[in-house]
Length: 161
Image (cartoon, rainbow, N blue to C red):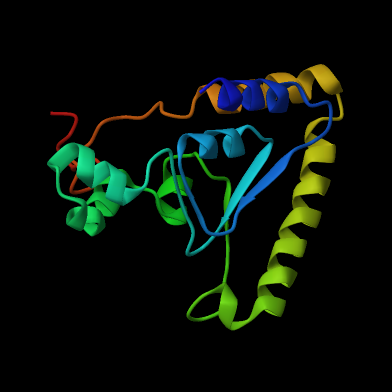
């Protein structure tokens, strides 16, 4: 607990642009610290959450074997997290996963980092205070969402009625 909080605080105050990339699975409280950044990307097959699907299923249903169902409910894929505005970008992987073409994965990550650094340089031309405030505000809104039925992340056509 305290180590995670200290890490979050330190990253919040770093006086340099911070880019985080989730490469595989971030599934613990420590994963929270990875979101304290100016830009967050995930490889397309990666997962990100404060608890693993197995842990979630064990707590919620007392049945760890329901981890696939938990994964669907938790919305922890790269695509889910872009939709929820936790993640900024999905980095494409080779067919079947990053391990099938490590060179392509490295090139895609490198291109993302280069583009992000250029964007951050333009974004924070006004200085350090702007960068730190933007990072703080980005982290603070994680978890703000409109509630929809868990079977669909989009509102129904008659939601306003």
